[in-house]
Length: 142
Image (cartoon, rainbow, N blue to C red; front, side, top):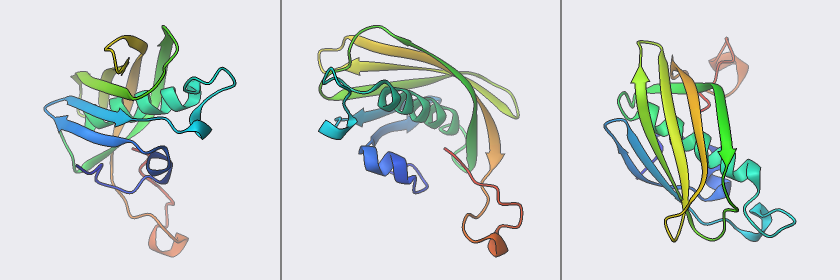
C-alpha cells in the first residue's frame, strides 16, 4: 500500500502503510539502530513522526486526493517503545478544512507506548519541485 506521495523522511524510517480507509490508518515500523536513543529504545522524535504520519494518513483516508498539514499535536509517552511498532490512527471529527485525529503506538505485545492527538488542515496537493513549476512554493507535508 502506498502513501500516495514520496515522503523521503518516511521512506528513510521505513514506515509501511497497512490500513488506509474510512477514517482509520495503520502503519508498521521496525526501528533501525540509528533510530534509537542512548537508552537503546526508539527515539521520541521517531515515535512522534510515526504518530504524526499515522494521524495525517487517517485524516487523508476519507479524501485521498487532498493533502494535509499539521497544525498542532500533543504527545504523551507511556513507556519505552522497543522492537517492531504499530501506529494506529483515527479521524475523530472533520470539517471542510480541518481534521481532528488521534494516534496510538503499540509494541509487538500490544502495549501502548505513546498516544497523540492532532489537528490537520486539508490542502490541495500542488506540484513540488523547482520554483518555476511551483510559483507559490507550496508543498504537501503529509
